[in-house]
Length: 161
Ligand SMILES: *[C@@H]1O[C@H](CO)[C@@H](O)[C@H](O)[C@H]1NC(C)=O
Image 1 (spheres, rainbow, N blue to C red):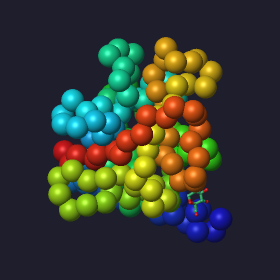
Image 2 (spheres, helix red, strand yellow; image 1 turned 120 degrees about the vertical axis):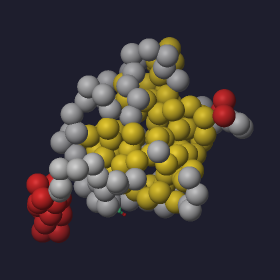
Image 3 (tube, rainbow, N blue to C red; image 1 turned 90 degrees about the vertical axis):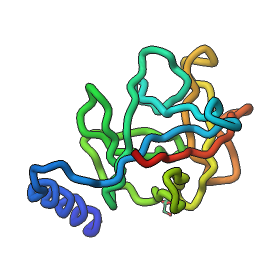
Image 4 (cartoon, rainbow, N blue to C red; image 1 turned 180 degrees about the vertical axis):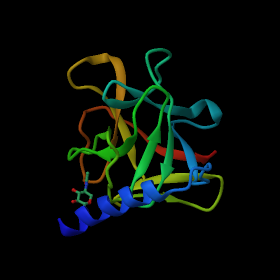
């Protein structure tokens, strides 16, 4: 608890003392890598309170930025956001941004793999409430089970911008 409070304070202080000029922190676009080739890459999207992919309307594109303790998300029309994971593994986001342990970008090239708690296995399920006609909701697999019967399995490619 002590540590968490401290890191929020540190983040706030860092934000206040950040210079006005453009910062050059690394930004990434995130894509579900579902099949081979470019057509198998589905950009992750914000939709309501979920992170989804495959929508052709009613969504927002976003960029992710690794700020050490926080993975910040930037999307037009949204306030400051940070990437989060619910207890069941569902990928979500928070506002205002909060530190979240467990995320790393793995690899040396322009395209890296998003990892959470040591897992690069992500999957998606039909929305539990809205059903199969709605976009797939994205989860990270950290345990030994999936949250639905027929998950779509993939990794998440993080491409440097
Ligand atoms: C990730 O790891 C942390 C620390 O070990 C644990 O508390 C948390 O439940 C894990 N999250 C998921 C979604 O498995």
